[in-house]
Image (tube, rainbow, N blue to C red; front, side, top):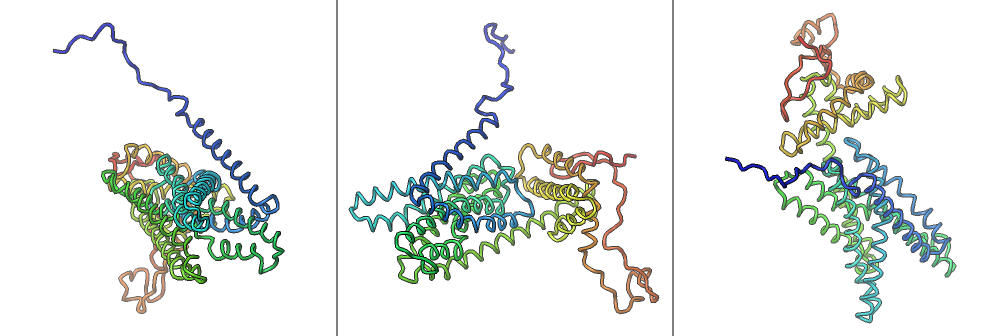
Length: 457
């Protein structure tokens, strides 16, 4: 028999409003303030070391590879592009917070080692090959970790890890190049160097022309570790923790090898560059492109379920699973409907891709408790944009479909009704659009919703 309630105990109510520090605008404000202060401090430190003229020269030269690198990472992320705010945060963190941490920590550690050993030369070597890789890669990995923890919906695989880590490292390399190029310009001002023989030209050639991908290559290894962890099931907690740590340690090791290449002799830098950096860059590029092709395969494999339920037309899985067809669809929409139609098609493609990835995670048991809510949100977003997207995707599917070969003996072809001795038209590569089927009950991970205006008997 249950005991009666205590008369002195007051009923407790669940908190309906978050604390002030849990509000999104407070977090965004604190983050923006932190990055802005870090940017001002790093700006003052770099300008103090390079001078005003050196800073301006370094800034003008260091900004040259940034658009190319950012565009390359956005190109890799075309299948399921993440939001721009994540990339802006990562670049700002690398250029401001990570660079500030690296400059302060490296300077302090190098001075401490020089004081303890009374050998400034060995302190500089030890700081460049041991201290700098550990400090810099840890500072850059912090941005990847923050996106992984607080923007988990946008971090779903290896490509996301590569893009987030690469953009963070691009921001870090941008600030570091300003410092190195500005210092080299100051050296030329003191020594009178100019032209090809100047220190500025040599530094620009090594850091901007030959190895603009060095820092992104190091940090991408950390991003791959986080990306594989994002693909792991929730029950493998130890593996999810060890994979990012392994990627970080590998990034530190490669960074140390790169910084220590000067100790291998006069041609040590070029030997490490040719024998290790270039092949590693090519291997990682192949891995990312291969992963992107697998993502397109996931789109083609998962979206037919929504065709059966009436949310998509029969031709859309093929069109959405081909980068060429996507491009043709956007061009068709822009040509016939203007920029707004092209933007709607691009959004339709992004939502459909995210929906395919969500369904795949659901089938594998990796989706969260909000699976049904997120699926419904994406389906509604697709439904509201179908007016502009469906004609464009239908045109793209038919434009990029492989041609149907004409048999040598048409009268012997099984489609004799279409391929007669007197000619005729081959069957359409895609079936004609049929009325949407009746609404079907929703079963999580198995059968999607029916569209809101589906035919009802």
